[in-house]
Image (cartoon, rainbow, N blue to C red; front, top):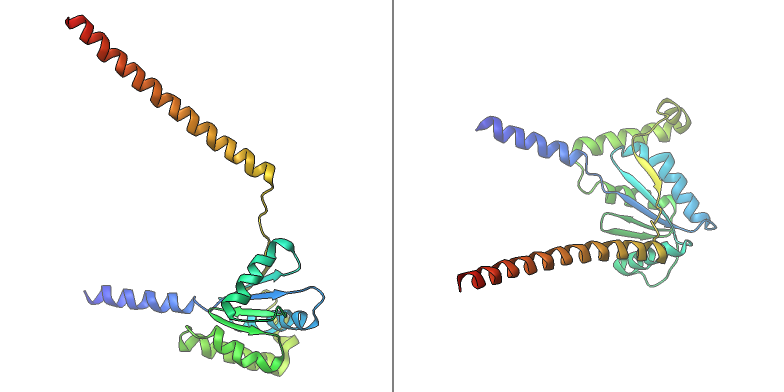
Length: 194
């Protein structure tokens, strides 16, 4: 019993360590503050929080506008200014290095103390000599990836619908054929009994 409880606690600790709040940055390619937010994230946060996943969403892509509008609505932002940074359920609009500690607090909300201490140590090392630290840790574990929407054209959607309709039609015909066959058997047995 004690082993089971200890295993569960150890598992929960491990899960907690792996759960830094992920970050989404809504940006425009022509926005200097957006580039600054991305650069700061790539040069600092992904080293400090190796378990974090960062997703970049270009709001100038028509397919991404819906995501951006949803983010503005959920953040209760009235203007469409970028960057908009979402970390867990926290929202930030704009970027300046003066916001870094506020962003860190949002990232660390569910992190255990060991992970927070590790992030603080990395922050100090980068502050002392960022180029040296980044060259010694050339491949950060955290990921920064560009969001790409999978767009289905009308023709592709119609082909999928038609294929689905064909499967339904085939099954419907098979069921009807079975019913007709069963009905025929019942009718022929009744006739033979008379």
